[in-house]
Length: 475
Image 1: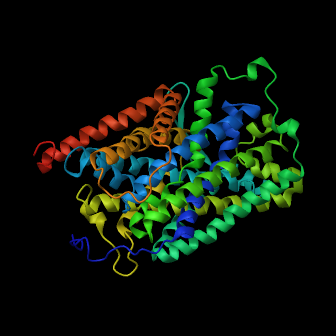
Image 2: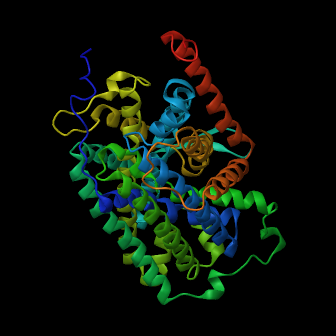
C-alpha cells in the first residue's frame, strides 16, 4: 500500500466565504426535510398542533446555534465536532475518547442523514406522472426486518430507488473538484431550493384558509394519547429537517475569516429556516386539510400543487423537489467527508483516509468512504432511519458539545474566543434540556440504540487504545 503524504504536503484550500458557507448550510437543511416530514409530523401531532413541533424545535436549534458558533469561531478546523471535542475535553486524555465516539457515530448517522435525502428523492419521483408511479410500484421489491412490535426496518429496490442511487453517484462526481468551485455550486443550489420554497409560499398565500391551517382535531381518538411524547416525536422529525445549520463547521479548515464567517452563517441559516419551514407548514395545510396532508406521505407537495395548478404543476414541483434533495445530499456529503479525514490526520482513524488530492486539494479518499456509505443507505426506508439517526447523534454530538463549550470557557480562559454566545449560560441549559427531552421521546428501542452505540463505541475505543498502548493505558 502506498504511503499517504505527510499532513502538510497538500493543505486544504480556504475557498468559502460568508455566502458560500451559508449556502452550504441552507442547501443541506432544505433538501427533502420539510417537504417529507410535514405528513409524518401531522401523524403524531394532528392539526395545528404540528406547528408546535416546528416552533419548539426551532427555539432549541437557535440556542444550539450559539454553541456551534462559539466553538466554530474558536476552533475552526476540518472535522467540526470531532475537533471541538478533542480540544475541549483534552487532546491527550478524555478528548481522545469523545472524539473517537463522535467519529464512531457520525460514520453511521452522517451517511444515514445524507442517504435519507436520496430516499426522499426516490419517493418524490413517483409524482412525476401516474404512469411512472404505476411502473415503479410494479417493479419494486420490498424487504422488511422487524426491530420491535412498533418499528420495522424496510428496504426496497426498484426504478425510483435506482434513480436515487444514480443521483448519489452524480453527487460524488461533482464533489471531486476544488472547494472554491464547490462553494459556487452551493450558491447555485441555494437559489434553486429557495425558489422551490418561494413557489410553495406564493401559491399557499394566494389561497390561504386560516380555518384549515389552524384547525385542531375534534374527535377524541384524534387527540395525542401522551401529548408530551407526541411533541418530542414531532420535534425529532422537525430537527431532522433542520439538521445542517452547522454544516460549515465540518469545513472549518476551508473557510475564509472563520472567526466571523462561521458564527454568522450558522445564525443566519438557523433563523431563516425556522421562519421558512413554519411558513411552509402553514402554506400547505392552509390549502390541503391536515387529515389529507397526513395521508399524502409519498409527495404531499405534488398533491398541494396539483390542487392549486393542476397536473403540470405537480410534475414541475416534483422535479424541483428532486433537485432540492440532490442539493441537500451534495452539501451533506461535502461536510461529512471532512470528519474521517480530520480524524485520520490526527491518528484517530485509518491514516490512509487522511490524504489530500494533490491537484484538487480535497480529502478525496474520505469523500469516497462517506459517499459509498451514503449510496448503501439510499435503499432503506425513510421514517425509521430518521428516528435512528437522531437518537444516535444526540448523546455523542449535541449533548457532548454543550459540556464542551463550558469546558472551553473554564479550562482555557485565556484562549481567544472571537465570538461569544449571547446570554451564557442560558443557551447551554436550554440546549441540554431540549436534547434530553427529544432523546427521551424517541422511545425505548431508539433510546437503547443511542445508548448502545455509545457503549459499543467506548468498548471499541478501549480495545483500540490498548493495542496502540495509548491513553488511558499510557500516561
